[in-house]
Length: 109
Length: 117
Image: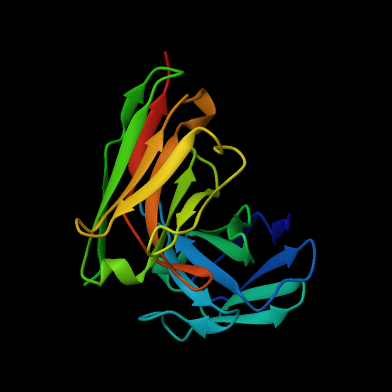
């Protein structure tokens, strides 16, 4: 089973700053890595899929990169609405199972 | 627009059963695979179960295998999760989600299941 480890657990930043979130896999994964944003009391929302593709309606300040075992979600300039928890996720090929990282909380400094 | 609405959550005693439902609209339900994902209070996300568009393939997380059963009714645009032999550690918000390739592109708002005596 592939384990996804996100770091840091908490990121304290100010609006306008750049956020860099890491997701490391225990073994090499395909490019099928996704990122989600979750705000308190809400369902997760898909941000990035296939490592670097933005989902519908996601602002350009969100970008994803990486390959192999190391992946990054970057928020170029934090807006007030971006303070939330972010999860990475990958799918294991047949039989399909899915794994999430433990999450990174981006909080207001 | 795509909508997924879960229902059926509630308080149940350990060892009890519960059936969750997810009503879908805004897309051709029979074209898409679906999953259940849960989130224990204050914790992260855990994938629970998957079902293919025609119900041919189903899979479960080890933590629920043998206790939970996923099903769907394409004529009713509905997804289900039958949960038996419930344990305290099954307490969570349960989300249904549409599967697109490797990702979950739409999620419901969730339904809370509490297992407690």
